[in-house]
Image (cartoon, rainbow, N blue to C red; front, side):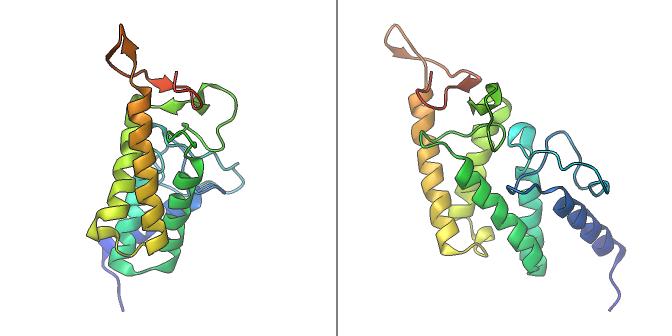
Length: 177
């Protein structure tokens, strides 16, 4: 049948989002990935968790899966989940980019709410009814990653004169300093 104009626009936005997903499962930061498709011939920019990148696209894909049951949207969403799980350091934090490289982007990133936004999404995937379309293994991995993230936050808290104080914008991914 005929699609309503809003459905056509939503499908176009979702197709645009799919075009920007990188080989690891992430999306670039500071680009409106719903506005237009990745231009043909342009190099695929690296995905990021910084500035809300990847998470907004994943939330939109999750809504689309719930409405349409489209397997392409579900596969892209799960590729994003796999990225978040894979990118998490054994110490529980996340870099700004995956793979992290050797620059400051590799550090566990608290600024721009990067850790918080990742952990909120993981908690929702693990617990919220809206994510029941996610298989049990991914939901369990999300729960475990969330728990590791909580432990990381506690280990990163800075002590001054023996008292727990605040956090830095970024912390070392190995020793939390």
